[in-house]
Image 1 (tube, rainbow, N blue to C red):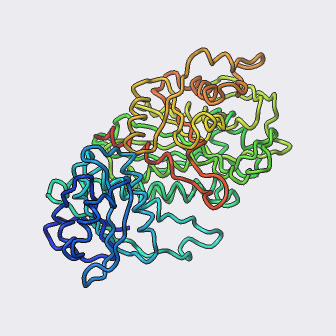
Image 2 (image 1 turned 30 degrees about the horizontal axis):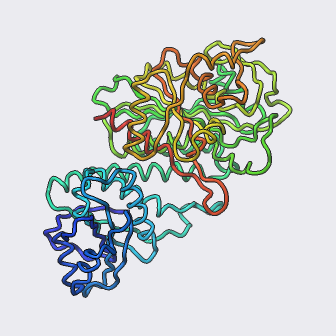
Image 3 (image 1 turned 90 degrees about the horizontal axis):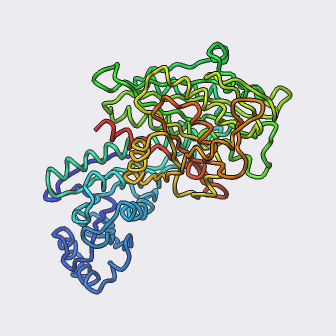
Length: 497
């Protein structure tokens, strides 16, 4: 997708599709009046009788306007100063679905009709670009090479605005929208890959490629190196697999001072999770290739931050493994020692994500970070609590949590806070170790957060459980969503600002 921004007063380059917005005000904009003349008053008539403005997001397609054979799409944007980000995103999604047609290779989108809806031009253009990116995403078919696959026509999007200041803000929105969209595409591509292709070693290879393309410093720790560091909890998970575990560390240095404290993202990278000895039911187990979507979101956020050249220092840490049953795999009742020195009783081998995350969180302390956010498809319980609409967030610093929730509202990749009270900690008591890796059925998402909190006492830390938001299940809709790239990227944009 290519984007440009132009002033409406200049004659716009013809496009296959021209989109204008109307609101409940019966007065047409100057641009709409121009189209109305070409339509012999049809547009004003439909507008006055309410046919075009009875539902936000409603669009009417009028074909063959003028000598250029341009399709006009008229969209109702709601009342003046009364359109929320959520409403505009739905509106943008509706438009994007029309633009995803392979027959459309160019579109002029006039933002004049939504200029008074209460949202800035940066927000409008950004969400429009993201919505178009979502609509145009296609799953990469395997095992054919990516460069051999059929691709749709490139789409040229031109935003039309009234003033130079609006153009400036729209350009900023395009820049961030494209970066986030590209980051989501990377996360979705990784998430949709099958487990026989996307292994821990494959993720490490992709991290190195990401580093070469974006000037990131990338380190990959082997199992032998992790063993020397005492990461026995992380290493215990890969014992049932023939694929060696990897600890991937990506460094982005965009702050003026290279020694400025970094923000750290830690992404769970279980490239396939069969549950180990506590094996999962077979139905739907194919979707356990998505258990590395936390890692994928870290990859996507790193790419987006590098593309925008944000003025921060950022480190992405990805502990990656497979969790399979085998004669050498973890068994219920086994006890392992974490890098922190705490011992863990493994009551359920399917609660393995926290076993790899706890050592990665301990490892992150060496970088003396400002903040640490871990992202994981950690518990099915969060789906019961929040469904697929919001990720669960908890942590040990309320300001950090508030900033994440705010970033979720801005990006429309929302999160909802769950309590991390000491009352829940006793569910993790063990007779034989410092801590058990599960706390029973009750409050499963919260006790998972409690487990991780035992390894973050001297960090400013938050945990995002994205098990309900990282992918869609079943049928033709099955596939990775690219979340939590938008919320993470927005959080980092806010820190850079």
